[in-house]
Length: 149
Image (tube, rainbow, N blue to C red; front, side):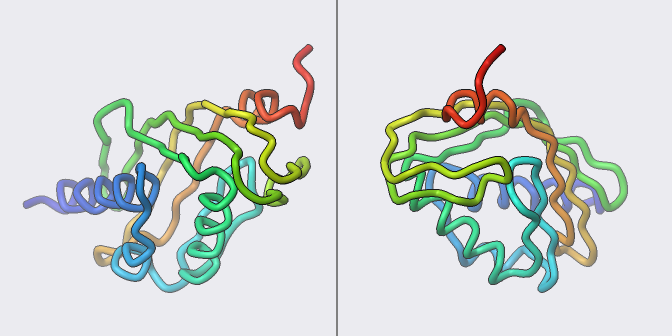
C-alpha cells in the first residue's frame, strides 16, 4: 500500500471515529501525535491529545447530535490529506463558550449546518495537524451569534 493510501485510510478512520455520529475518544490516542494541532476558524486552536479530547467532549456535550461526514473522496499527496465535509448539530446541552466570537446559553435549541475543507498532515502514521477552513459565518448566523445582512 502506498504512503498516500495509508494516510487516506488513517484520515478516513479519524473522520468517522472522531468527527462522525458517535465519537470514540480513544481514537485520539491511537491516531493523533502527542502534540497534534487542531485548528478551525470557529474555535481556539487545540494542541495535544488531552486538549483535543476536552474540546470534543465539550462540543458534543453542547451539541449532542453533532455529526460531520465527508462529501467527496479524500485527496492525498505525500504527508498531506485533504477532505471536504458537511455537518453540524443542535444545541441541546450546557452553555457553550468555545466560539471565538461569542457564547451560547444552555440548551438554545438552535441548529447549525455548514461545510468546510480540512488539510491534515501526517508523520509516521500519526496526524500532526488538522487545519480546517469552514463556513463559520453560516454556523454563527444559524446560532444567532451574528446577524445576517
